[in-house]
Amino acid sequence: REWRFIKKKKKKKKKKKKKKKKKKKKKKKKKKKKKKKKKKKKKKKKKKKKKKKKKKRCQRRQQRPGD
Image (tube, rainbow, N blue to C red; front, side):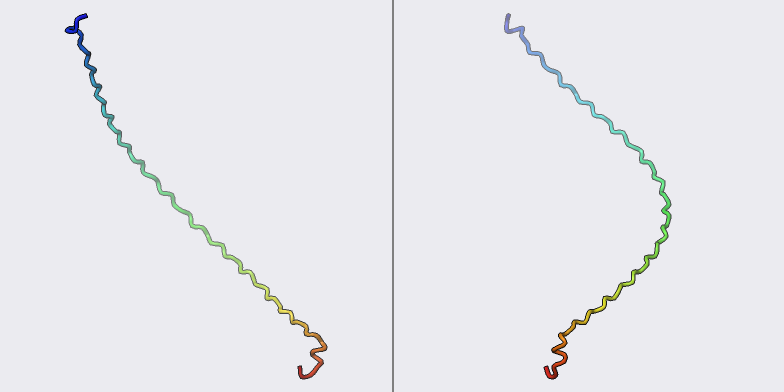
């Protein structure tokens, strides 16, 4: 083998192909008509008033005058 003849093969660089991006067509959305909801009237709950219980004072104290 003579050195003269040995030539390294040059690797060819592969060119990358650029992909073309396809433009997407935008679809137009159909607007839906909103139905108006009827509002239900809420019934107001009547609050029950709590009766205050009168504390019973011991009778002996009530009977004693000037306490």
